[in-house]
Image (spheres, helix red, strand yellow):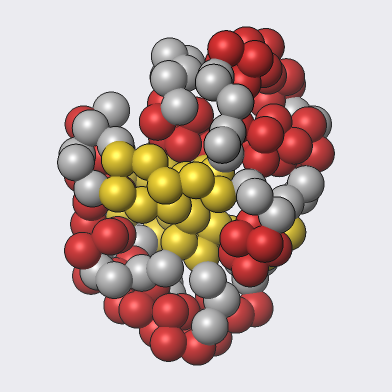
Length: 165
């Protein structure tokens, strides 16, 4: 997890506007299920795409699966704009970047629908993290076997959480 948190710290330091989603977001809420990547829902503005592309280039981003290493690959703002999601291997580990996710929508949608809460991770850095309700909706909408396995723990954490003021 420390490598994943280092990737999150680097994203924050690069001034990228994003919401932490997926397994690291679940861990921020107390989930114990292991994850091997960082998932972010990023703000799809031109300036933020430029910052994200520069960050991914700096960290030698390449497609995760079955992409021949001898073929050139580059991340730029045009690729991000044309892609709803990318799964990338970087020098910081695997980072999945999303312009939109099922069950939630875009960064702006997530901000508008109480799907985001401020949480300080073990890094001491405060950032936007998808709420437990948002994580549950996203995993239900993704409807993958691994998401079904995560849902009972997320629901239990939500049910144990104190009511919001």
